[in-house]
Length: 111
Image 1 (spheres, rainbow, N blue to C red):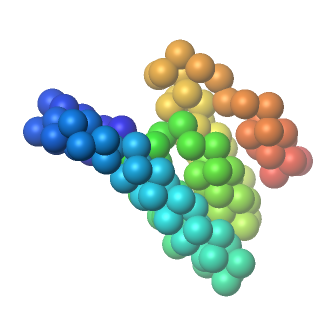
Image 2 (image 1 turned 90 degrees about the vertical axis):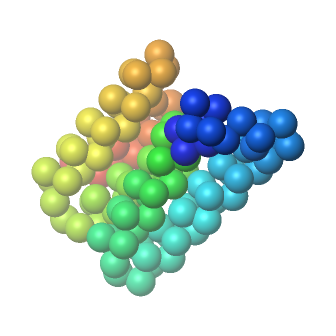
């Protein structure tokens, strides 16, 4: 993802085969923190964690789902719409659409 782009001076990450491992680890860790924060009743921390993970993997479905869950847990329709807009924008920028599970999650929270 963006933090490890070759243009940023991190070409050695690809040469060593570490880029994917770093991105997967960062996204998984952010997802775990988001889940723990939601379970602890801290949707703000959960949203922050999901956003941090999205910096390295903006199309990560688990992080997108965590962001939607966090926004819904905060009981803010505005935050929920904002998260959905962010998710769709990230997907559209890469020429893809959110998968059906994310769409269903959005519909579930947006009732």
